[in-house]
Length: 114
Image 1 (cartoon, rainbow, N blue to C red):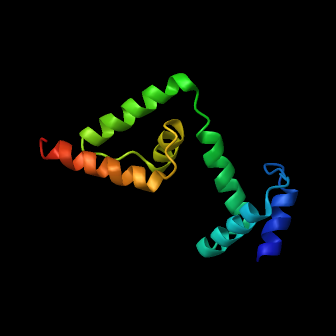
Image 2 (image 1 turned 180 degrees about the horizontal axis):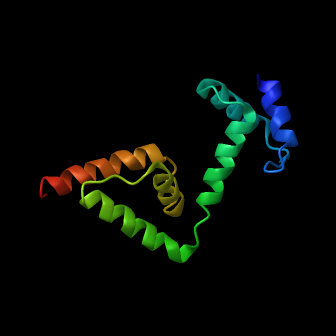
């Protein structure tokens, strides 16, 4: 049950409460996405914070990330979803899913020797 899960996390020393105020429209989008994915608010928040923390790239790491992703693409692999999110942030590209499609096309061209 959700209440039991919340109580368990509240009493667990490995968990910490995080609170703040965000724009109402963003909060609504967050709740809708959580509901659509069947996530509790705390699980969605944990996921969002984890992604945000992981994409905290230093400027000198951007080139390394781009090179690593490009190497994966030309060797027939695709960057992981967190890598795509980080790469999109590093190059200021607004949509990681579209970036994935672009990289898939590049992968196809590389495979065909174009």
